[in-house]
Image (cartoon, rainbow, N blue to C red):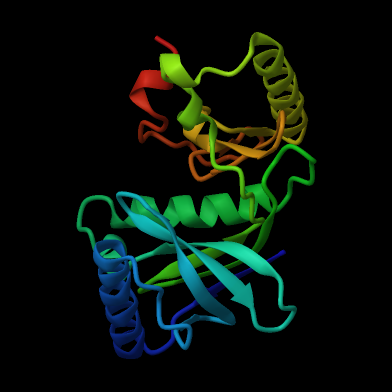
Length: 213
């Protein structure tokens, strides 16, 4: 796994991300596919997978290997946020550096990462089954036997991470990806903390509805 911190041509990056954002908005409204000539680093953008408060996830293809990945991107305006820009950039670097150390069948693999002054992206293992948040409503609950298996696998993955000195800090259904059946993978280590680190983090991390009292 490689992590690159780059400076580059900020003006060119701004233009590129503006066009990618525009096409993403068109895709969301019309259902059309993205222009496949668009690239982020070495990745060809294939289609939109999801959009969050600070970034977007695309299905992308590695032009070197031909492998499909999920590409998490952070838009330039997020890094420029006067209050939280540094925090978001730090979380992106955190996820790349921490999760890249973890090799476990129930943890989403980090494949590649580039973080610059103006933007950043992380290529992660593609998991096609959605996440557990789709199964939290009364009409879509999973069988108890499946829940027990999923919980057991997640505990095993978290125990492994803890032995590596890493605490996830944001476990919730949306961060547990469904591969197939009860095969799951924990994602999004952006809020993780390295227990052996000398760095003290004072910002509150996690999702309020899923945090301990």
